[in-house]
Length: 599
Image (cartoon, rainbow, N blue to C red; front, side, top):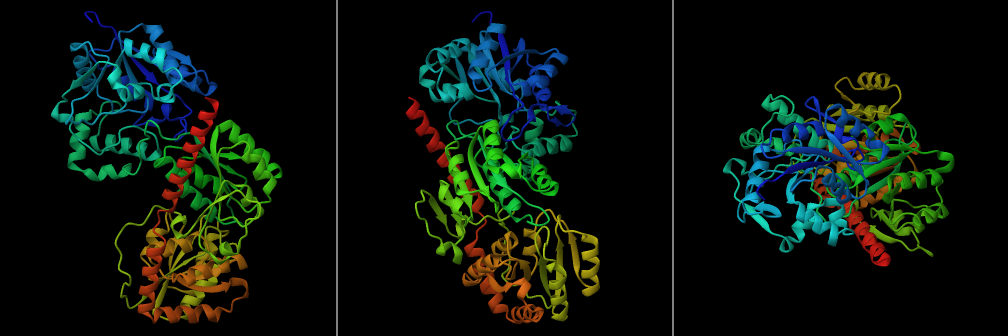
């Protein structure tokens, strides 16, 4: 290649499943795609830059941005990235194409040029790092026009080629000529994520720019590496996010749940834990289908997930419509609505996978998979005519937060014990003040730590009443996470629900108040497992029983230690990760089966 024309083709869409709209998301004062284009312009080798996006109307905003910034834009099929690259290549006719992901705001022009130099020197079709070397770079792969034509001729229908383009070349390196480059030692670093696929990734980029005090688009990769060598704690911001493999199952998972003043927020909290694992660990996009109030939807949107509102009068129709619009690969049901077995059976005909969470209704018999804790009512369920796989056990339990991995003494040894009082997000039966009065009646050996949930009506009035009943009470309004609060308490009085699971997970012995007979039965499963004490249905409970149970546990450190150990051993906090992996495996199997049938 004596006269080598090199073009960068930037693949970008607004419809990212894990982080919708990310291409134009502002980071350090500049749109994400703007970072990428700005850094590509610093290359001494790249002669042309083309933005390749889709014809989906949602991507009109990208095309408009490109036009406003003087960037050539080519549009093609949303589902065929390889096809878009072919259109872009025809438009600029390069000898070498630099495939660039628009979600990689920290690409490095000098590193790209070094890759191109190695490739041109050997008239190669692709470039990889020399064996035994490593470099921190992401989102860029140069390839020859010959390599692109090879894929168009022989891999036009290959899913890896269509979605990942150069991923197919990596899997078929024996078919092409590969140049191996030895990178500059300045780029030698391992363990950092540079692409932006999730809110945590965006937070990492913002933190980097803030620490480097750099203008948008001007933080060099070598400066970043220097910063990370000095302060590896920055890696924890998005270190939990996993990169999708080339053959990983992908798509969107639809989560159907509700929350609010009457329902509480427990179902939303545990579904958010699952959604984070699906997005961050397994690479799925997640959309919530909700009927509930704005506070529940606000919690979901604050975590970076989309909410699709559905009509409660036609729940099945709303789910089906949203599933079609999002291309859902799976549906998770965590509801207590009138959705029937027939409704779920009809949805099963449209979706590859339906998962029911802790569901005792008849609709569980139409799900592909049902997930339960080992509660007494779970053992009582029968499965006549059902075609449902089961996952039963504490290991599938979903808590509302990230797994608690910090060490903790099983008993603090404090003379005055801290007692968590937490009645869920809304406390629909007004149990908070009852519990605080019980703690106050127990005397000076205990002091309450009171959580006022985000959906609780008249929160200030409740807090004032609690403070009057127990002047030494610590009042916490809508804390971001309950796990660290529970971990810092010696005992708890909680309305049975997600908070009960969280207390067991961090090793905080608890007294459980059931809002319903079903809750009380589930709480009995916790008592049988040794996690805490079931006080029964709160509405029928004499307050003196709460005081006596609290005094009994306060006076028995050995029993508290045993309960703490049983809880931490029983509920390890990895239920969301396990279930997300199970869903990913089943979606992959269903996809492979569909493709084999089509073939």
